[in-house]
Each structure stands twice: as C-alpha cells, then as structure tokens.
Image 1 (cartoon, helix red, strand yellow):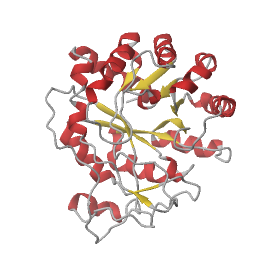
Image 2 (cartoon, one colour):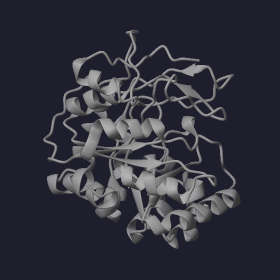
Image 3 (cartoon, one colour):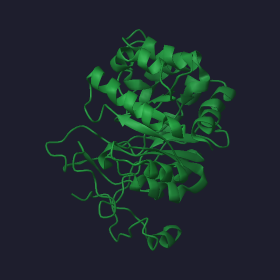
Image 4 (spheres, helix red, strand yellow):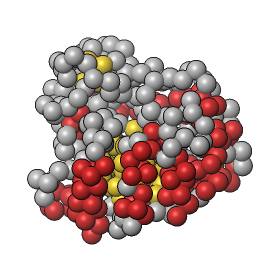
Length: 322
C-alpha cells in the first residue's frame, strides 16, 4: 500500500536528481514527516551529527520487504535535510530500517543526496556477498544493524548466535555492529559483548525505561559496557513524543559519566511507529515528535560545551570516519 505521504520532489534543488533514477518525481502533495517546532536554545558546535535517522522511500522505487512487521509513511532525503537545517545539524548517519530487509537502496539514495556529510549503517544477511559489502564500504557504510526489538527476537541464545556470526562476518572491514535491543539482553549477553571483536553501538538507551530509576535491571550492565570502552550508546529517544523528556536525564548523565567518549546523539527521525498493525501492509502513521524540544534536553544532560562537542562531533567523527 502506498503511503499517503509522497515524496515531494518538484523543487528546483531536487529536479536534477530525478533523471538519475535516485528519486521519483511525484505530483502528489501530502503531509510531511515531522519538522521541529521548538527553536534550539543553545549553540551547536560545527560538524554536529545526528547519528540515527532513516529514509522511507517511495514504494514505487523502493519496495518494502514482504516479511516486514509494519509499513511506515514515506520520509524523503529532502525532508531530512530540512530537519537538519532547522536544528543546525551538519552531518547525518542514515540507518537502513527493517522494512527493507537486507535491501539498502533507499539508504544509498539518501547518502547520495547528503554527500560528504553522510555515513550509513546497513542491514545484511547470509546471502549478502563480500563484493556487495565492498560496494557498501565504497559508498560510506560503516557498520550493520541487528534490529532485534522490531523483529521480535528475544531469545538470548538466538541473539548470541546472530551476534557472533555478524561480528565474525564484518570484522575484516572494520565495521561496527549496531544493536536495537533491551536491557535484559544486555545483561544476558554482557560477557559476549565485552569480548566482541568489533565495536558495538546500542540504540536508544538500549531500551532503558525512563519511567523507572537507574537501578532498573540491566542498566548497570549497560553502564559497565560503556565504561569498558567496548560499547557506544545512542542517547536517542525511540517511539512517540514524551510528556517529560527530563526523565531521561539521570540515565544520560550516568552513561556520559561512565565514558563520554562512547556517547552518541540522534533524533530517530522520521520517528517510525513500528507497533504491529493487523496486517503488515496497513500504514502506521509516523510519530509527531518535536526534535527541537528533544535536542534542547542535551544541555541539561551535558552542561559543559566541551562534553557536548564530544557527543555531537568528536565521537561520530571517530566512529563513522568523517
């Protein structure tokens, strides 16, 4: 089913890309993915990076994986660029979402639009060849993602096998493994993660529940992994808008205090709603998140400008090779 939110590509800036086959021109004008409504109230350092975004392409060009668990509305590179212009963000990491399976085409299209200021994280499977990975490397991909939460994978033994296989596969390229999982898996596989032959990146506070305190099961294990230097954590907020983002403050500060060199920040734009619908072809509307409001939490989480520069600039530069 084609989303009601179509790519809007008739502007002069995008017109030249249509003939390349990267983008599909559409005469349909529809609602867009969320844009920030709150002005940023602090100065961002030059080279700041949004380390977690997705592109949802027009299904006519980028058909979704039949085994996906949800169908999001579209979100284009042009909309993403508008978001980052409003936020004052220069760089971006584009992560292939689960809706495409191991097809990274929509992410590649986003990379080509954003150019030298973009890097990406791929999804692969056992049919992905070394030659295909070499091509992804040449395009700016720096790692792979295991999206365990969205795909409903919860058995620690299955996850251990997937993780070890993935690490063995990608280590020769110097890639990292990005993991979308929960704190109970962090605890169950802590030793395997500590012994990982490749760097790790945990999405979205590793599923920390901001409604609970920092003594919730598994959070101390996440802190230990960050402190060890083995794991990065994205202090990014998943799912829909929150009434009180300040609840994340103690968790962000605990992670920053453990090892500031292993902290990344991201929006999670365009904020997909991955809750399962009755049919996987039913469109799940994107969450209406104000990314300006969320980004303005960062000075509370990291009051020192030098610390924010590490999180927004220095750490992404090192991990993603800007």
